[in-house]
Amino acid sequence: MSQTEWATVACDTARPPVPPPRRSGDPLTPSERDALLAEARARRVAWRAHSITDYRIRVAVGCFCPWPSAPRLLEVRAGRAVALLDTVGRPAGPLIEPWAPNTVEGLFDFIEQAGRRADVLTVRYDRCLDYPTEIRGDQKVGLPDDWFWTTAGNLTPRRSR
Image (cartoon, rainbow, N blue to C red; front, side, top):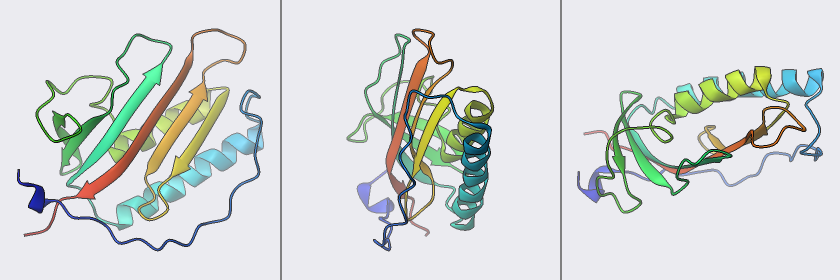
């Protein structure tokens, strides 16, 4: 793929209101959990309204596990991951975890799953395209080695021909 096949997205730079800070080590209250899941559902609807199904997105993941956390570009066509690239666009091996599940729809699926089970979960969204850009959490407060994070950004849609 040549670089010219990928487009940038114009964005309104007005910032939405910032939610009040919460102590990241405290478990979510039922109302916080409900609000987090409601926002994820609303953001998914907004993301889908953009009708972007072919794109590249930079993804990095980390957790207590030994997975590599180096960022990769995930190439997505018709909503499905089709290639894993290094950060300059060269092939970076097979589509495997931890990167392969992290299409935008996959990120939303993860938020919904973790939002129902994890004690701690925080999510940030792209202000232009409404996709998740940062997911951080802790499965069970007080247990070691069960934290996780994912960052996603630099989403570049494929140009229409």
